[in-house]
Image (cartoon, rainbow, N blue to C red):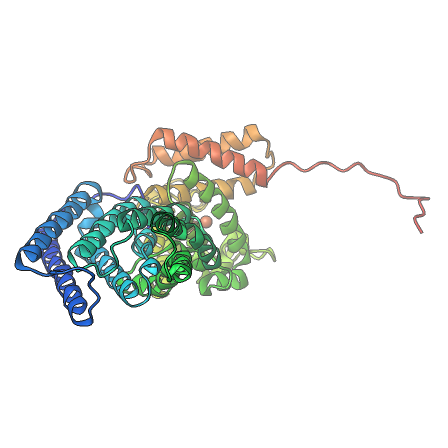
Length: 487
Ligand SMILES: [Fe+2]
Ligand SMILES: [Fe+2]
């Protein structure tokens, strides 16, 4: 889940509460079951270093601590991530990530090398399917659980190093350095940083206790622990994306690749719309960054906001390179209906192609309930002013998120700037301010909680971008080349 900060908090239903309670009970039981399995395996395979590692008192003690730990997780989500928690499937996803982490670390620690444990796996997976804050919290929780497994589980993982510090620091480093990694290869390179705490722990252990026979294996394992976490993460991420309908930054990057199906179609069948989308994309990305919204989501939404034009590309000005305008033969009402339809057509196309719902929603909302002024004016000229403006308005809905509002503004400003004769900064600023004010007066931002301060930042960012893109060209002096010989 890449959370858009402007998402609204939905109301709780009894079904949500019951499902969430069930998820917590079932998964607490599952983690306790994993603990029981751990101590049994340790007993059978002689992996425990100290005994007795399993007594009824110890078991009850473990259960109590686990219930406290998991309750803290529930409290955190209930206070800080209400919207996320309301869907029980999200809680289930977090539990599944923790359970996979326990299994992966347990198996690697017991059968390969304790220092090779992919301790950053939980932080990484949570980061890419939720957000950094939840990833950091889940990582802390996972470290506590891993420590309890170590402490009560018969020393399954070894008792000679501070697992809590290793897990905590590897996970935090992963959440800090991996988020902006743009490619999977770069992610693998950065995994060395994630391994650093484990390497330092091996070093400290050697200084404190002297070199053991396993020192080389321990050092290599510690150095590879980050890479192992990244490797398992790469295998699991697509499964999580598909199973829980989550969209990671990788997915967004793939969607904006020019080889992706709809973008390719846009390039081939509606090149004018594609070029317009590229400019909207640059403006929207800068605006989202400027007001601390998800820039990658804004970028992807901009790419797809006009894909509905693929149904009838020749009816849109930017694709009429040959000068033929099919609207010349249509009534203004019919023309307006064709133009209006592109928002819903785009929504349907995005859903049909199984792209993320939030991209489809922004596509549907990017014109809100704005009127199509050109055909409304044309209709008024034909009918002596008696025209129902509602027939010339987009059906909406109005933007429901700040990202949708940004796309609406960037879209309108790009189209206006393209047709400007005077592209001086002062004039561009005047036009952008008017576009934002018009939309505000028409109530287009009423449903998206965008503030005046944010709108001012957006205006400033759009002006900077547009003056950069459509800067006034130098007028070349006329030079008489007669008599000049350069051969
Ligand atoms: Fe549009
Ligand atoms: Fe557009």
